Amino acid sequence: MIFAKKRGGILLAVAAAAAAPLLLASAGTAAAQTNAPTYPLPPGFPSITQVIYDSTSANVTASQGFQCCGTSEFGDAVDFHPGLRHLSQVTVELDDWAVYSNPATIPAGYTAVTAWKGKPTGAWPGGGTNPNGTTYSNPSGFYWPLTLNLYTLTKAQLSGINKPGVYPAAGTKIASVTKTVLIPWQPTPSTSSKCLSYDTEYFSPYLQAWKSPSGCEFGGPADITFDIPGGVQVPNGVVWGVAFDTESWGSNPVGYDGPFDSLNVAVTKSVRIGKDANPDGAFLDSTEAAEYGSCTGVSTGCPVGTFRNDPSGWTGYVPAAKFTASLPLPIP
Image 1 (cartoon, one colour):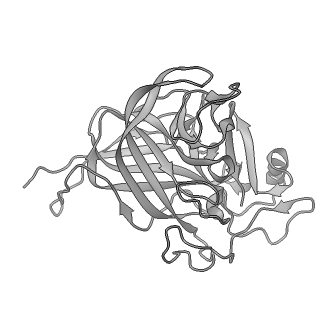
Image 2 (image 1 turned 135 degrees about the vertical axis):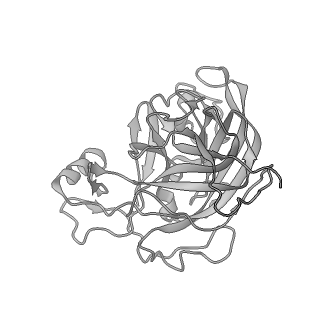
Image 3 (image 1 turned 135 degrees about the horizontal axis):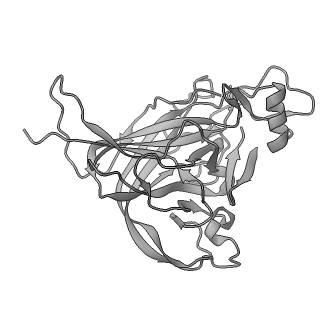
């Protein structure tokens, strides 16, 4: 079941389907295109790292849906803080609405969102054994492959949109890392009267909100870190995007429903380190014109279905990611 709400003039959509903590330890394999050799640190030598961009936050208030909104890739253009440029890690903040199990008793007048505990997992993308097993039986989360793409930051003329002009654009692909990660479930929905009121206000009659120390919330944030094997030397700014397959969308849609259909990429309110190279905008690949603020009011011909800058409609929201650079050792 898909839910969406309007925030700040852009449709930030969320898919409801379950339960868990804020930060995620990832698992699985990674493959990357890099251009820098790796040199192991001597025993006892401390690593030297620097966060050169950070728009993540402990408080995720909105996110971009994929399955609900015809989306295949989502990200942004960023300018790095002065310092190191040997990129070693990128962390992308996700927002998962998939629920593992529901409360034992559902209040009258409410409908439980889909609980995935014990449901068949379906075929694994690309073949091979599904690390979830034959059913979703891991109370910590579910496994799913994600891809991080990095592109050079350039500029290009955008036409066919409501404000044509020259904007930041994605150029040559610098690196691509695909990784299978454990996505934590959203915490189990709450039946407290406060959270029920929150459900009614936003998503009635579905029981979705969960109770956190700070109040009632929807979705569960998860920080997913992509290691860049060997690192990659980056310029002073890049375009990043995270991509994954869902039931209907992605490079290879899987063709069946699953908790990944309730997985979103988080947006936050501001940049803490570095600069947003694309104020008021974001980069996305969606088949739906309604997902692009730059398509608002354009009757025909607005470009969709390609990873491009959407330079308007995202005021007050920044796609959430953190970039960490390291100091590689000289050749022995």
